[in-house]
Length: 283
Image (tube, rainbow, N blue to C red; front, side, top):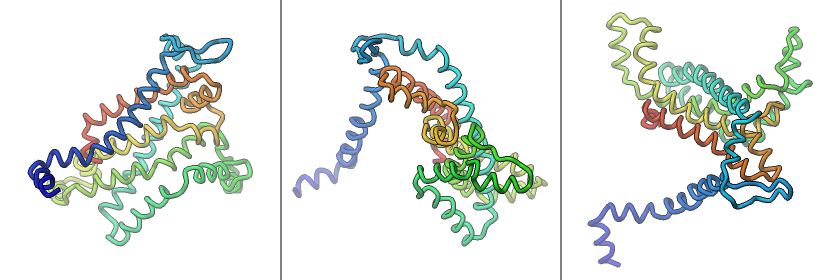
C-alpha cells in the first residue's frame, strides 16, 4: 500500500482519473445510456392494430413531426420559453444590480437568502399554490375585482406567470454573480469620463454582465422548454412537454421518443450559442 501510495503521489493525473472514474462511469451508463436508448426508440415503429412497438427501423416518426399539430406546438413552446426568459432577464437585472451594487452587506445577504429560499420549496407545492391564486375564487381575482379588473384566469398568461415565478431565481443568481465580479474601478472610470448612470449601465455594465444573463437563460429557457406539469395545471394549451407525456400515456413510445429529441436538439443548439457568448465562464 505504501508503494502504491508513493506511485500515485508521483502521478496526479492518474490519481484524478481514478477519483473521477466512478462518477463518469455512472454518468455515461445512466445519463448518456438513457439518451442513446431514447434516440434508438425514435427510429422504431408502432403496430397500428396491436399498439406494440415493432423493432424495425423507420423514419415515420420524424415525418409525423412535420404534420399537424406538432410544428405549431413546437413554435408555441419556443415562444413561451423565449418570453419567459426575456421576462426573467428584465426582472433579474434591477434586482441583481441592487443586490450587488447598492445594498449593504447585511441586506445583500438577506436578499440572497430570500432568492434561494423558494428553491427549497417543492415544485408541486408552488405550482398548486399558483393554481389556487389564479382560480376563479382565488385571491388574485378578489383583489383585482375590488378595483373593477379581472384576473388572467387559466391560460397562456397564467403559464407565463407561473414559469416566470418558478425560474426567476435561476436568472437572478448568475446575474448577481456577474455584476459582483465587475470591478468598481470601471464604474468610477466611466463616471470620471462623464458617463451618466444610464450610459454607464448601457455601455459598461450590460456588455460585461451579458454572459451571466445568457448563463441564466440556459436554465430558464431549457426548463420552460421541457416542462409539462405547470401548463397542465393552469392551462389547457398543449406544449411540447404535454405532447410527449400524452404519447407516453397512449403507449406510443417511438413517437414520444422522436418528440423528445426536438427539445433536446433545441437545447443543444442553445448551449452552443451560449458557449460562444461566454456563458459557461459566467456560471
